[in-house]
Length: 301
Image 1 (cartoon, rainbow, N blue to C red):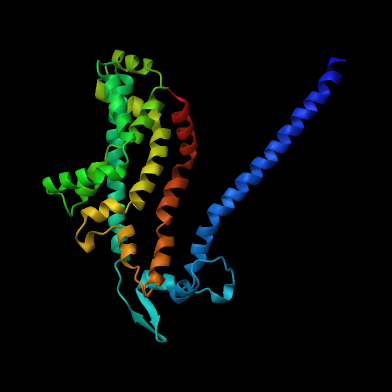
Image 2: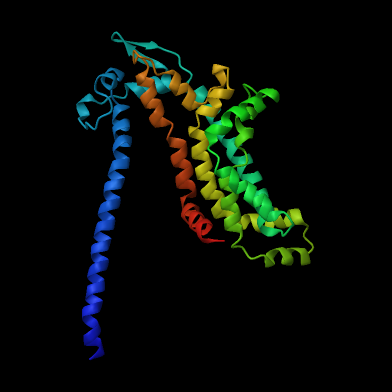
């Protein structure tokens, strides 16, 4: 009898769950299509002549008759069709690409290292001003970055770091959000490991880098992906620091191709699509750690 009484309630809950699942899937499907539309449109535009992009803009027109590989041939060989003939038109795309690689790798490697060390100190050690230090770090997250541009720029000038890679990397090497994430993640790690390492005779540096650091791989992966995206796509601050065109990163270089006449859109659209490749490689290489790292960092504390 009890089972018969509970049956209608069970079927009602099951029906509600089914309806909720349907609307959730429909909502996320629509959101995915809205996000994918400009990406697919840009990818299709990279296989069309630059004149069509100027005339019609980005549009989702999958007609294969208008697609061509000329833009990518120009991107990789510096040869383009002008007045019916293949001519060599030099560009600096891969120089900008290499500059972006250098800035991104240095920014991510140094940023993750220093943020990990700072977060390790304020999460694993109990010292007098620990909460004050953490409050100051959190307070910097509330200040919009654009407000700090002028003070940082003046500081870079005084340090004679204008037009240098160090001037681009150093101001953002210790991100407050990255420190906060590492700290939240490490609060969930067992502190008994520190005592076990000390009993075994390990010094504090060995405990930090050989015992605790391997346990934070998910946090490193999650912050590595996000930091890579930020450093690779950053344009405003490198544009303020760099003066020499030979040092431009990819976003700055692609921005210089935009003219009112649209005569460089062939390289611009193909180069923009090809610039996504490193970020995709980084994401797929670390995606198995990414979700676990983001989840753990969000709930620990």
